[in-house]
Each structure stands twice: as C-alpha cells, then as structure tokens.
Length: 341
Image 1 (cartoon, rainbow, N blue to C red):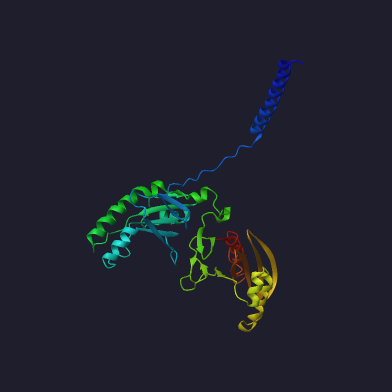
Image 2: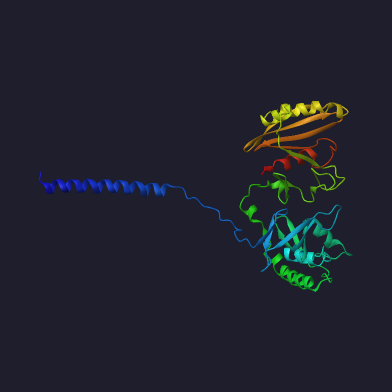
C-alpha cells in the first residue's frame, strides 16, 4: 500500500473517532436535567427585615441605621403587636442631650389580624380602620408620632425629617421577607404561617403571635403573664464529670433524664415517672420526647443534644385539658420548628 493510501486510511479513522466523541458529548449535554437556581430577592442590603413578623421594607435614603423594637401587649388590644422605629443617629443625638428625648420615635407600625380590623370597623366610637396593606395573613398600618421632641432643636429637626421619609416608603415597599420567599432554614408549616421567630441562646423557634419571653421569669415563653400556655427551656453545656452530664455527652438522653427525675424525688410531692418516650429526628444531633407523670400532673419534655449543646424544653400536658388547642399539641407544633444555631 502506498504512503498516500495509508495516510488516507488514518485520516478517515481520525474523523470517525472525532464524530463519535462529539456525538457523545452532544447527547450527554442534551440529556442533563435543567437546574434552576433560585436568586435571593433581598440581596439589596437597603431593606430592613422585621424577623419577628417575617416582613421587610426598603429603608429611606440616608437611613441605613434604621432600627426597631417590638412591643407585644400584655392585655387584649386593638392590634397584635407593634414595631417602634428610630435610628442610631437619633439615639446618639439623644445621648448628647442628656436623654431628654428618650422614648420618642419616628413612627410605629401596627400588625393586625383580619378579626382585629373587623372589630375596629364595627366599633362606632373607635378611631376607625387605619390605612393598611396585607402581607401574608396579617395587615399592617403605619402611624406617625403625635409630637416631636421639643427639648432639642437638632433632634426635633432630624426626627421630623426621618419620620416623613419613613412614612413615604414603609407601606409602599412592605413585602414578605426574603428568607421566607427563599425557603429559609426555618420553613413554617401551614399551621404556623404568620408565627414569629424567637431567637434564644443558640437556638430559634417559631412561636405564635403575642408570645414572648416572660421578663419576670427568664426561660419561659408565654403569651401573657397568667396564661395557661407556656414553654419552659434551658440551654446548657454538658461539661464536667458529673454522672448525669457524662450520660448527656454520650447521647444517652433518656438515661440522663431518668437520673434527674430520680434526684428530684425529695423536692416534689411525688416522684415522677417517665410513662412514654420516643426518639426525635434532629439534623446533626439526637433528640427524645417523653412524658413524665407526677401526682395529678403530666409534663411533656423534649431534650436535644446538638453540637455539644444540650437543649431542654417542657410544658404541662394536662393542666388545662379543655384548652383549644391542647397544650401538648401546641408544644409539639412549636418544637417541630426548632433549629439549633
């Protein structure tokens, strides 16, 4: 065979191989599933997120230091809760005036349920229904302060200016917070839609509206001081050589809790007995739920060990059996939103 003929054969083989390779990659490329990446809706840092409500709005120009505090009424009110706004500029300026303008705000946002707005609508002697926008299951209104601080002209001038700017943007740009739109780490179930985020030490929970930590009883979440509903919690580092802590560190949660109940026999009217228990799935940790029966009283508990931190939660199971929802049911709904931080 001539050299030229041999070269032609080699060329044909090379072309065939190239066609096979190219065809393979084209087939693979077309066969790959289309992956749609979600784009964060709040990459703009010029939004203020009210995490307790799950809403956010655009900050006015020049007010990146905008901040808020949440006020939950102790007794029944026309609203569910309030967000009271100010800025760091005003806080710093107030310090220079000796605190004479402490407590003045640049506006208040109120959060209502549909029923609360309807009650306002039917109240012939009330102030009427304020202008509002609906986000999710709640309605929001904004009101300006009744008067500006008159103790300092610089403070008053800035307060009036910022109040006007906030009023112009807050309801206009109010929307669901981006962490809800993007399916955040805490994704509320349907029955917990509209609940607020509680930030504890090293953990988060979704809790019903109006619930808050009792200022007189740290470690207790409740809607009101005398409510039959409550959730007690304790967060500890299971260190040391004590036998109970060793059990906790080794993930033997039920054995450790039995030891604690036994050690408390002298402090209660009757020794508690764990009558029911089950494992709780916890990402990156272990958890149990159990019921302790005391004389005339049952308690439901959840204990979680995650990232070398021990979380303990509990409430009364049947102190008020006629409540709707029952305390045990509400406890489980809240605890199902647990997230260790």
